[in-house]
Image 1 (tube, rainbow, N blue to C red):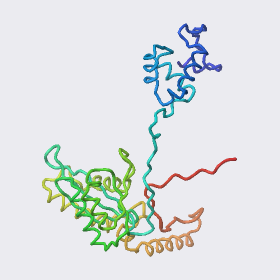
Image 2: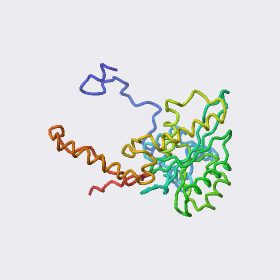
Image 3: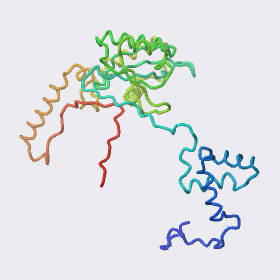
Length: 307
């Protein structure tokens, strides 16, 4: 292989130059294309075509030959009468302030018994990254999920049609009780694509922060222990943790609009330092501008057409 790749003329293999005896002729290839495109066979795949021909006491070629010829001629693109496969991208959600888009999910918390878990229900505001509500239970349930959403809406005084709630396609997320509660509260539901793990990035990122925290134990002895730990984590995360995706302010300060003053003060301090020691900066100081827009499931930008 190495000697072959080193040859400047490229492929220097010495294979047989004679045409294979079992190769299809030009006429046979054309016949396969003609039959496959005919009105009687254009909606059938090669397996169905050859058995239909056999029932008429006709043989043209094998299934593999039909597939090979059709692929070479780009004729394998959706041959049946059913609708062609479509890609259902999740709807783009844009947050320009708190309590506009929430993301939520459920994750496992380890217990002393192998294979038995506690379940952490967690709701996050994607604009501020603040935890707006959570609960830990011994089971997954659409009813428990609906109760948590209702509690969070009362706590944060959410009006009808104010927020969108994004989740994956799990049972607790799409259960009748949950969907009924969302409808009653006037919440717009949003869901990830089936079997796609990265359509709910905000919740997945928060779960990593939870489980990679240095105080997170190997397992929780009791469910009460997990609830006590989570209460402490919520306080630390919301009010002490400086989040990298929101210019290193706390989720609490961003959620309640305190981050603008913090970032402005940081900018002033850096500008003052630059005036005192201008030779230490070859360009502008660090960017402390506030992030005004957060997008969940951003749509693909259309490329400019080249004429």
